[in-house]
Length: 257
Length: 253
Image (cartoon, rainbow over all chains, first blue to last red; front, side, top):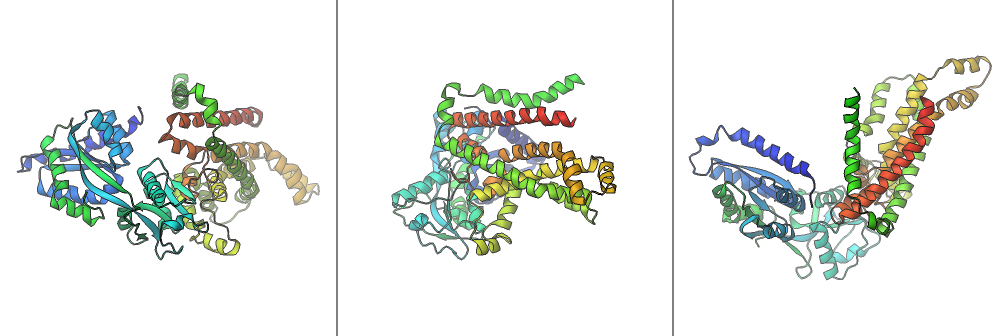
């Protein structure tokens, strides 16, 4: 499974660049922890982790956090290829497990958040969608993520647990592409993560899926064994798990594990 | 000079070698006859041929206007026509979605008048392919019209030929090789179209999933299938380009 060496080179370049930017100032910090840590995080964590990184940096003046955001599967491949990453936060265990098997994780991954699925409809709900059975309606345009990506497999779990056979009009390559088509009003309904509704900023409405039918994605976080900044990396993980970190995650729609 | 040329050639050859080296030859017949691949191949053919036909009907007159009609702002109009050549296709797809989607400035009246919904339909795939590919036809035909020797047209006109006769008997025959070359480029671009299609038309087997989309989906789940379909696209494209380049581009030069 060798592929995409370019992505890790880009990451390396970003890390070198970021390191170069902070190298001069880091000695001024009074904290014992100094340096730049790279946190690879699932794209759905973007807003929450930007907030967490800023607060962690403020609390630890010598430390800089560089976020490397992307699909969990792509981040996993980068790390397996040897990308210089200190912390990995995945959108599901399936993309964390291979790293555990390879012995690349320090200790065991910890689940730090969960994200439920929700029905996303355009503002005003023009299709009159009320629940999962509407995904079988022929007169609506409905979309899911393709089955290969986590949001697509979770959406199919949700539909099959409620006995709905959907008439799907498009299978989008990722959740952002799916959400864009809901925002534009081109799809009457889609199944996305709960946190996507908050990040869409009012252009999309969420219709709750009953708990018994809903599926949840568990987000694990771990420090990588190869990190040279153990204190800083595990400090970041501890901050994500702390009350302050959990509050930021909750603000962006994540629920505690 | 020759050494640099060889390096230049390697830019194109190396990726092909990489692809061919990973082809699962023994599974090839099985992979290429799955419903997914057959559906995608059929759809790619329909979309690329339709886009080429539409480009001829609309693009040749547009090339005439750009080459032969003096009007203010012609440079800007030409730039707009050529924009899809340099724009990232995904940007073009987003623009199409906001213009021609159900809620789009043109798509909404179109939908209420005809009931036609372009996104998530094969029509949408054809529109996306036409959008990205037609500039190749316009630019090729316009170039031919600008560089052709206009004395034959003037001579015919002085000899009493009507404008329609001049067009039919002198101008069009003179640009036929360029039209065909433009059609080949247009077809090839439409056949390989990905970004605008997935952004505007979505991705559904049998309806909007063309071969490039099938490759993209397969890359995350079935690497061998992705490579096999990629090989299919390379072979089909090469056959068309070789067959037509000998026949027409040889004649042009």
